[in-house]
Length: 269
Image (cartoon, rainbow, N blue to C red):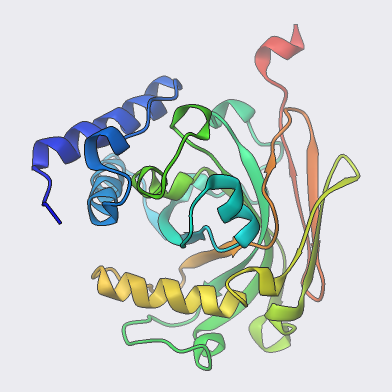
């Protein structure tokens, strides 16, 4: 594979950063890096994350994307990816979520975990529960800086795996958690069911997703650390967010999470 010049990486990163800053979605970056150059896409992701860290934001964890076959079909991709969670993405307990913080939001129900130890050696599915202290019902509000969600895998990776915001809901200690592969998930919008799934819809089990992430992060030289929040991936199809709506997910054996969005300012006139 041809190694892209730094100026090309910079041009793609600047395009995405400008879209986030101006609140105007941009064209895909695959015209610069190609659809399949995932290594360059992660370089773009890292460049923009480094700039955000330099501005004072901090890393609180990672997210795994594209774990659900339903979501892969929705976006036309065929493998997982990961992104970085920053402190100001966490909207847990913050009240109504400001809809203007996101451009093209979609919501998906997930299981989140908090790590109990650093993960610096290869992780297996058998050992995965041992590195976790707490299991949550959660929402990820995914977003895209790329207009109309016109993305390839390289586009979404470059765009921090289409990260937006997240909300942690009810939790149980890991030792009291049910078999994560067998949990059932329902998602409602203003009381109407809009998405369902099971733990097995997330790479066979959210534990498998955590294993994939932990080992991939080791390969990238940025291993997961104790205290990290990990969003393990969607349990069912993601749903476009309607301003002013309230979303509730129930995940069996774990509990519920709720997210309410504000109306857009022009809707208040």
